[in-house]
Amino acid sequence: MSFSIFFFILLLVVPTHEASELATQTCDKTSVKELCNSVLGTSTATDADGLVKEALAATTREGGDVSVQIAKLLTSGGATAQKGLTECGDIYKTAMDKLKAATKALNEKSYADVETKVTDSKDTAKSCEDGFSGASPITEQNTKFSNLCDLTLAIVKTIKG
Image (tube, rainbow, N blue to C red; front, side, top):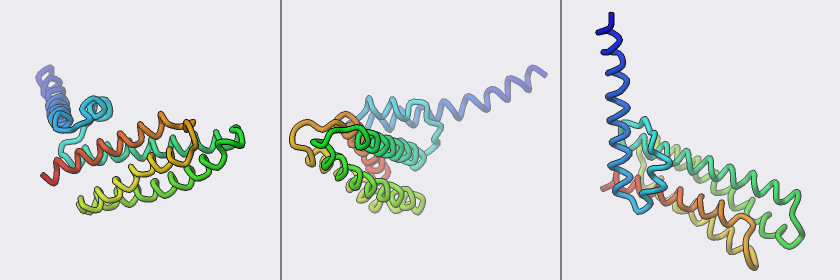
């Protein structure tokens, strides 16, 4: 009986360790190693495609969070930031559509399309920041979104070689 339990636990631990090792090795190859480890450190992905899916999902979640933050600021912000926030909202809507297309492209293993869509999405953060005269109220979120795009792109590049 105890041998069965040990064997079962071993079956659970070995794949998890291998997945963790894959994430660590992949993160070591990126220029955003710290972010990569924080996003993928508990990954259960067993291949690079799985890591890209997880990074892309994190990027998409952050883009959604930025969109929610923009909506909140639009309802409570002053007139000065309204124009910039409205433009950012439109820009992020487009970015979210591109990330959805990137996910579809990844499922089709069309890595060049994934790169193009994620690169276009990354440009969102800069375009959003450029829409403000002075400091943007969402600089921190834009930076995080941009960095997550960089992470996704870095992992795609490890697949393409």
